[in-house]
Image 1 (cartoon, rainbow, N blue to C red):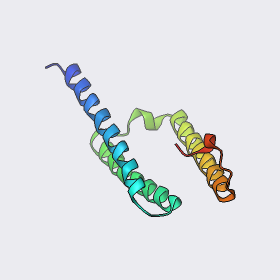
Image 2 (cartoon, rainbow, N blue to C red):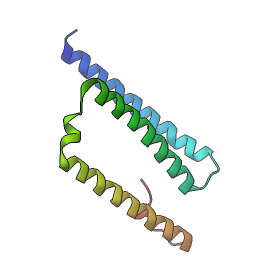
Image 3 (cartoon, rainbow, N blue to C red):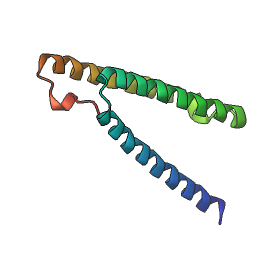
Length: 107
């Protein structure tokens, strides 16, 4: 098996694993009885810890990835975070008033 074929197989495995974890995360949210904001906060903390660990291992053994050296990547990440937080806050504000439009529902 060539390196390219092995790399493609590994990438397909990771995509399948990510989709499976994403789907089971939705089931976990439906089963819990916590407040939506608490659940979102805990998911964010877990994601931060996991991605921090991945980044630590990545930089420790392979150096800083090229993607993290680009300022556009950081700008896109910050813009995405602000847009997502804005949409979430609009949805929460509307749900307290009882008129939350569907287009502002968290994704």
